[in-house]
Image (cartoon, rainbow, N blue to C red; front, side, top):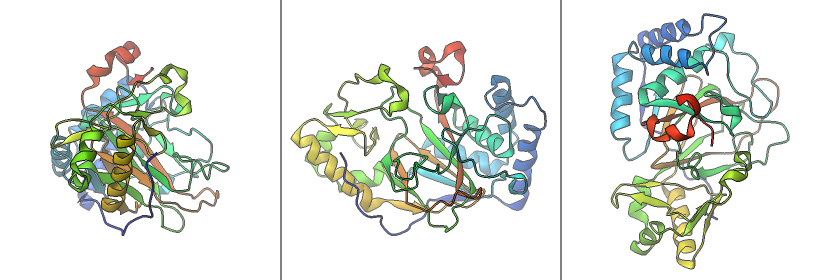
Length: 330
Protein backbone atom coordinates (compact mmCIF):
# COMPACT_ATOMS: atom_id res chain seq x y z
CA UNK A 1 0.00 0.00 0.00
CA UNK A 2 1.14 3.58 -0.70
CA UNK A 3 1.79 5.59 2.48
CA UNK A 4 -0.17 8.78 2.94
CA UNK A 5 1.54 11.73 4.60
CA UNK A 6 0.03 14.98 5.87
CA UNK A 7 -1.18 17.45 3.27
CA UNK A 8 1.23 19.99 1.83
CA UNK A 9 0.67 23.73 1.64
CA UNK A 10 -2.28 24.95 -0.39
CA UNK A 11 -1.51 25.67 -4.03
CA UNK A 12 -4.01 26.25 -6.81
CA UNK A 13 -4.69 24.70 -10.20
CA UNK A 14 -4.17 26.72 -13.37
CA UNK A 15 -7.57 28.14 -14.25
CA UNK A 16 -9.77 29.68 -16.88
CA UNK A 17 -12.27 32.27 -15.60
CA UNK A 18 -15.37 33.06 -17.60
CA UNK A 19 -16.59 36.61 -18.04
CA UNK A 20 -20.16 37.40 -16.90
CA UNK A 21 -21.23 37.46 -20.57
CA UNK A 22 -19.69 34.03 -21.18
CA UNK A 23 -21.35 32.65 -18.05
CA UNK A 24 -24.70 33.91 -19.32
CA UNK A 25 -24.07 32.29 -22.69
CA UNK A 26 -23.29 28.91 -21.11
CA UNK A 27 -26.37 29.23 -18.90
CA UNK A 28 -28.61 29.87 -21.91
CA UNK A 29 -27.33 26.78 -23.72
CA UNK A 30 -27.64 24.64 -20.59
CA UNK A 31 -31.23 25.73 -19.92
CA UNK A 32 -32.19 24.89 -23.49
CA UNK A 33 -31.14 21.30 -22.73
CA UNK A 34 -33.28 20.95 -19.62
CA UNK A 35 -36.54 22.65 -20.47
CA UNK A 36 -38.68 19.60 -21.22
CA UNK A 37 -40.18 17.03 -18.89
CA UNK A 38 -38.75 14.19 -20.99
CA UNK A 39 -35.17 15.52 -20.98
CA UNK A 40 -33.11 12.73 -19.44
CA UNK A 41 -29.35 12.82 -18.93
CA UNK A 42 -28.78 9.17 -19.85
CA UNK A 43 -30.79 9.33 -23.08
CA UNK A 44 -28.38 9.06 -26.07
CA UNK A 45 -30.51 11.58 -27.96
CA UNK A 46 -30.11 14.08 -25.13
CA UNK A 47 -26.34 13.51 -25.14
CA UNK A 48 -26.37 14.17 -28.90
CA UNK A 49 -28.10 17.50 -28.25
CA UNK A 50 -25.47 18.36 -25.64
CA UNK A 51 -22.75 17.56 -28.16
CA UNK A 52 -24.29 19.95 -30.67
CA UNK A 53 -24.65 22.59 -27.96
CA UNK A 54 -20.90 22.39 -27.28
CA UNK A 55 -20.33 24.16 -30.59
CA UNK A 56 -22.22 27.19 -29.25
CA UNK A 57 -20.14 27.61 -26.08
CA UNK A 58 -17.91 30.69 -25.80
CA UNK A 59 -14.80 30.47 -27.97
CA UNK A 60 -12.43 31.08 -25.07
CA UNK A 61 -13.93 28.13 -23.20
CA UNK A 62 -13.80 25.77 -26.17
CA UNK A 63 -10.27 26.85 -27.02
CA UNK A 64 -9.06 26.30 -23.45
CA UNK A 65 -10.56 22.82 -23.28
CA UNK A 66 -9.11 21.87 -26.67
CA UNK A 67 -5.66 23.01 -25.58
CA UNK A 68 -5.98 21.01 -22.37
CA UNK A 69 -7.07 17.94 -24.31
CA UNK A 70 -3.96 18.19 -26.52
CA UNK A 71 -1.63 18.53 -23.52
CA UNK A 72 -2.80 18.80 -19.93
CA UNK A 73 0.39 20.51 -18.74
CA UNK A 74 2.58 19.90 -15.73
CA UNK A 75 -0.35 20.08 -13.33
CA UNK A 76 -2.58 17.70 -15.26
CA UNK A 77 -5.70 19.63 -14.22
CA UNK A 78 -7.74 22.53 -15.51
CA UNK A 79 -10.00 24.73 -13.40
CA UNK A 80 -12.86 26.53 -15.12
CA UNK A 81 -14.48 29.17 -12.91
CA UNK A 82 -17.79 30.96 -13.35
CA UNK A 83 -19.94 28.17 -14.77
CA UNK A 84 -23.68 28.29 -14.02
CA UNK A 85 -25.14 25.83 -11.52
CA UNK A 86 -28.59 27.40 -10.96
CA UNK A 87 -28.02 27.93 -7.23
CA UNK A 88 -31.43 29.57 -6.73
CA UNK A 89 -33.22 26.35 -7.70
CA UNK A 90 -30.77 23.94 -6.13
CA UNK A 91 -32.54 21.37 -3.92
CA UNK A 92 -31.15 19.97 -0.68
CA UNK A 93 -27.85 18.15 -1.01
CA UNK A 94 -28.58 14.44 -1.56
CA UNK A 95 -27.69 12.24 1.40
CA UNK A 96 -28.38 8.71 0.18
CA UNK A 97 -25.77 6.23 -1.08
CA UNK A 98 -25.19 6.06 -4.84
CA UNK A 99 -27.08 9.29 -5.56
CA UNK A 100 -27.11 10.30 -9.24
CA UNK A 101 -28.62 12.94 -11.53
CA UNK A 102 -31.02 11.38 -14.06
CA UNK A 103 -33.13 14.44 -14.88
CA UNK A 104 -31.60 17.16 -17.03
CA UNK A 105 -30.50 20.14 -14.95
CA UNK A 106 -28.26 23.13 -15.66
CA UNK A 107 -25.30 21.50 -13.91
CA UNK A 108 -25.83 18.16 -15.67
CA UNK A 109 -26.04 19.94 -19.02
CA UNK A 110 -22.80 21.83 -18.31
CA UNK A 111 -20.99 18.63 -17.38
CA UNK A 112 -22.24 16.75 -20.44
CA UNK A 113 -21.37 19.54 -22.85
CA UNK A 114 -17.86 19.70 -21.41
CA UNK A 115 -17.47 15.91 -21.59
CA UNK A 116 -18.47 16.03 -25.26
CA UNK A 117 -15.79 18.64 -25.83
CA UNK A 118 -13.19 16.28 -24.38
CA UNK A 119 -14.47 13.22 -26.27
CA UNK A 120 -17.56 11.39 -25.01
CA UNK A 121 -19.17 10.96 -21.59
CA UNK A 122 -18.97 7.46 -20.18
CA UNK A 123 -20.15 5.58 -17.10
CA UNK A 124 -19.71 2.11 -15.60
CA UNK A 125 -22.75 -0.05 -14.98
CA UNK A 126 -21.39 -1.39 -11.69
CA UNK A 127 -20.75 2.10 -10.36
CA UNK A 128 -23.72 4.27 -9.37
CA UNK A 129 -25.97 2.26 -11.68
CA UNK A 130 -24.26 3.51 -14.83
CA UNK A 131 -25.46 7.12 -14.53
CA UNK A 132 -23.54 9.64 -16.62
CA UNK A 133 -23.80 12.38 -13.98
CA UNK A 134 -23.16 11.30 -10.41
CA UNK A 135 -23.42 13.04 -7.04
CA UNK A 136 -20.35 13.16 -4.82
CA UNK A 137 -21.82 13.89 -1.41
CA UNK A 138 -21.21 12.83 2.20
CA UNK A 139 -23.45 10.02 3.43
CA UNK A 140 -24.29 9.49 7.09
CA UNK A 141 -22.59 6.37 8.40
CA UNK A 142 -19.97 6.45 5.63
CA UNK A 143 -17.73 9.06 7.26
CA UNK A 144 -14.64 6.82 7.38
CA UNK A 145 -15.21 5.30 3.94
CA UNK A 146 -12.33 6.05 1.57
CA UNK A 147 -14.58 6.85 -1.33
CA UNK A 148 -16.85 9.59 -2.62
CA UNK A 149 -19.43 9.02 0.15
CA UNK A 150 -16.90 9.56 2.94
CA UNK A 151 -15.65 12.71 4.63
CA UNK A 152 -12.25 11.59 5.94
CA UNK A 153 -9.11 12.10 3.87
CA UNK A 154 -9.68 10.59 0.42
CA UNK A 155 -6.35 9.13 -0.65
CA UNK A 156 -4.70 9.55 -4.04
CA UNK A 157 -6.04 7.45 -6.90
CA UNK A 158 -6.89 7.28 -10.57
CA UNK A 159 -10.57 6.64 -11.25
CA UNK A 160 -11.19 2.97 -12.06
CA UNK A 161 -7.46 2.32 -12.43
CA UNK A 162 -8.02 -1.44 -12.54
CA UNK A 163 -10.28 -1.31 -15.62
CA UNK A 164 -8.95 -1.87 -19.13
CA UNK A 165 -11.01 1.16 -20.19
CA UNK A 166 -10.38 3.66 -17.40
CA UNK A 167 -11.70 7.17 -18.05
CA UNK A 168 -9.31 9.65 -19.64
CA UNK A 169 -10.82 12.61 -17.79
CA UNK A 170 -12.68 13.16 -14.53
CA UNK A 171 -14.94 16.23 -14.43
CA UNK A 172 -15.87 17.60 -11.00
CA UNK A 173 -18.38 20.47 -10.84
CA UNK A 174 -19.01 22.13 -7.46
CA UNK A 175 -22.64 22.94 -6.68
CA UNK A 176 -22.10 23.62 -2.96
CA UNK A 177 -18.99 24.03 -0.84
CA UNK A 178 -18.73 22.40 2.59
CA UNK A 179 -19.94 24.45 5.55
CA UNK A 180 -16.48 25.24 6.91
CA UNK A 181 -14.84 25.77 3.51
CA UNK A 182 -12.03 23.35 4.37
CA UNK A 183 -12.57 20.50 1.87
CA UNK A 184 -9.93 20.66 -0.82
CA UNK A 185 -9.38 18.71 -4.02
CA UNK A 186 -5.88 17.19 -3.90
CA UNK A 187 -4.03 16.54 -7.16
CA UNK A 188 -0.56 15.27 -7.99
CA UNK A 189 0.59 15.14 -11.60
CA UNK A 190 3.05 12.48 -12.71
CA UNK A 191 4.91 15.09 -14.75
CA UNK A 192 5.94 16.75 -11.49
CA UNK A 193 6.40 13.49 -9.59
CA UNK A 194 8.68 11.77 -12.10
CA UNK A 195 11.74 14.04 -11.65
CA UNK A 196 11.70 13.28 -7.90
CA UNK A 197 12.04 9.52 -8.39
CA UNK A 198 15.29 7.60 -8.54
CA UNK A 199 16.20 5.64 -11.66
CA UNK A 200 15.69 2.39 -9.78
CA UNK A 201 12.19 3.38 -8.74
CA UNK A 202 11.25 4.41 -12.26
CA UNK A 203 12.45 1.07 -13.59
CA UNK A 204 10.44 -0.81 -10.96
CA UNK A 205 7.28 1.21 -11.61
CA UNK A 206 7.42 0.23 -15.29
CA UNK A 207 7.60 -3.49 -14.39
CA UNK A 208 4.45 -5.66 -14.10
CA UNK A 209 4.85 -6.08 -10.36
CA UNK A 210 1.68 -4.39 -9.07
CA UNK A 211 -1.97 -5.36 -8.68
CA UNK A 212 -4.73 -2.77 -8.36
CA UNK A 213 -7.93 -4.36 -7.09
CA UNK A 214 -11.37 -3.14 -8.14
CA UNK A 215 -13.81 -1.77 -5.59
CA UNK A 216 -16.37 -4.27 -4.29
CA UNK A 217 -19.10 -2.65 -6.40
CA UNK A 218 -17.57 -4.06 -9.58
CA UNK A 219 -18.19 -7.67 -8.53
CA UNK A 220 -16.16 -10.83 -9.01
CA UNK A 221 -15.77 -10.64 -12.80
CA UNK A 222 -12.73 -8.42 -12.27
CA UNK A 223 -11.30 -10.40 -9.34
CA UNK A 224 -8.50 -12.16 -11.26
CA UNK A 225 -6.60 -9.12 -12.48
CA UNK A 226 -3.07 -9.97 -13.61
CA UNK A 227 -0.04 -8.01 -12.39
CA UNK A 228 0.47 -4.75 -14.25
CA UNK A 229 3.04 -1.95 -14.24
CA UNK A 230 2.16 1.24 -12.41
CA UNK A 231 3.59 3.31 -15.27
CA UNK A 232 3.25 2.60 -18.98
CA UNK A 233 3.89 4.24 -22.33
CA UNK A 234 6.58 6.81 -23.00
CA UNK A 235 9.50 6.82 -20.56
CA UNK A 236 9.57 10.62 -20.46
CA UNK A 237 5.78 11.15 -20.26
CA UNK A 238 4.12 7.92 -19.09
CA UNK A 239 0.59 7.11 -18.05
CA UNK A 240 -0.25 5.94 -14.54
CA UNK A 241 -2.72 3.52 -12.97
CA UNK A 242 -2.93 3.28 -9.20
CA UNK A 243 -5.12 3.64 -6.13
CA UNK A 244 -3.52 4.15 -2.74
CA UNK A 245 -5.75 1.73 -0.84
CA UNK A 246 -6.06 -0.81 -3.65
CA UNK A 247 -2.61 -1.06 -5.27
CA UNK A 248 -0.32 -3.77 -3.89
CA UNK A 249 3.37 -4.23 -4.73
CA UNK A 250 4.35 -7.85 -5.41
CA UNK A 251 8.13 -7.61 -4.98
CA UNK A 252 10.48 -5.84 -2.52
CA UNK A 253 11.73 -3.44 -5.20
CA UNK A 254 8.16 -2.66 -6.24
CA UNK A 255 7.24 -1.99 -2.62
CA UNK A 256 10.16 0.43 -2.21
CA UNK A 257 9.29 2.19 -5.47
CA UNK A 258 5.64 2.49 -4.44
CA UNK A 259 6.63 4.07 -1.14
CA UNK A 260 8.91 6.55 -2.90
CA UNK A 261 6.17 7.34 -5.37
CA UNK A 262 3.73 8.04 -2.53
CA UNK A 263 6.15 10.44 -0.85
CA UNK A 264 6.77 12.26 -4.14
CA UNK A 265 3.02 12.65 -4.70
CA UNK A 266 2.66 14.28 -1.30
CA UNK A 267 5.59 16.60 -2.05
CA UNK A 268 4.03 17.97 -5.25
CA UNK A 269 0.39 17.78 -4.12
CA UNK A 270 -1.79 20.79 -4.84
CA UNK A 271 -4.94 21.56 -2.90
CA UNK A 272 -7.79 23.54 -4.43
CA UNK A 273 -10.94 24.52 -2.55
CA UNK A 274 -13.93 24.47 -4.87
CA UNK A 275 -16.72 27.04 -4.80
CA UNK A 276 -20.07 26.86 -6.66
CA UNK A 277 -19.55 27.13 -10.41
CA UNK A 278 -16.00 25.73 -10.30
CA UNK A 279 -15.32 22.84 -12.65
CA UNK A 280 -12.06 20.91 -12.39
CA UNK A 281 -11.06 18.60 -15.23
CA UNK A 282 -8.48 16.04 -14.13
CA UNK A 283 -6.39 14.22 -16.74
CA UNK A 284 -6.87 10.77 -15.23
CA UNK A 285 -4.04 9.30 -17.30
CA UNK A 286 -1.29 11.36 -15.69
CA UNK A 287 -2.82 12.78 -12.49
CA UNK A 288 -3.95 11.19 -9.25
CA UNK A 289 -6.49 12.99 -7.09
CA UNK A 290 -8.15 12.86 -3.69
CA UNK A 291 -9.77 15.18 -1.14
CA UNK A 292 -8.94 16.59 2.28
CA UNK A 293 -11.17 15.79 5.25
CA UNK A 294 -14.22 17.87 6.20
CA UNK A 295 -17.12 17.75 8.65
CA UNK A 296 -20.59 17.20 7.16
CA UNK A 297 -23.71 18.30 9.04
CA UNK A 298 -26.38 16.37 7.11
CA UNK A 299 -28.64 19.40 7.09
CA UNK A 300 -29.34 19.60 3.36
CA UNK A 301 -26.58 22.14 2.76
CA UNK A 302 -23.51 19.89 2.77
CA UNK A 303 -20.81 19.84 0.12
CA UNK A 304 -22.19 18.76 -3.27
CA UNK A 305 -20.05 17.98 -6.27
CA UNK A 306 -21.29 16.35 -9.45
CA UNK A 307 -18.99 14.06 -11.41
CA UNK A 308 -18.80 12.87 -15.00
CA UNK A 309 -16.19 10.74 -16.77
CA UNK A 310 -15.03 11.27 -20.34
CA UNK A 311 -13.11 9.10 -22.81
CA UNK A 312 -11.26 10.62 -25.75
CA UNK A 313 -11.68 7.57 -28.03
CA UNK A 314 -14.99 5.90 -27.20
CA UNK A 315 -14.70 3.28 -29.93
CA UNK A 316 -11.85 1.48 -28.15
CA UNK A 317 -14.35 0.30 -25.53
CA UNK A 318 -16.99 -0.81 -28.06
CA UNK A 319 -16.87 -4.46 -26.97
CA UNK A 320 -17.73 -3.38 -23.41
CA UNK A 321 -20.66 -1.09 -24.32
CA UNK A 322 -23.99 -2.73 -25.31
CA UNK A 323 -25.76 -1.10 -28.27
CA UNK A 324 -22.86 1.36 -28.71
CA UNK A 325 -24.15 3.33 -25.73
CA UNK A 326 -22.27 5.33 -23.13
CA UNK A 327 -22.27 2.73 -20.34
CA UNK A 328 -19.42 0.24 -19.94
CA UNK A 329 -21.18 -2.88 -18.76
CA UNK A 330 -18.23 -5.08 -17.84
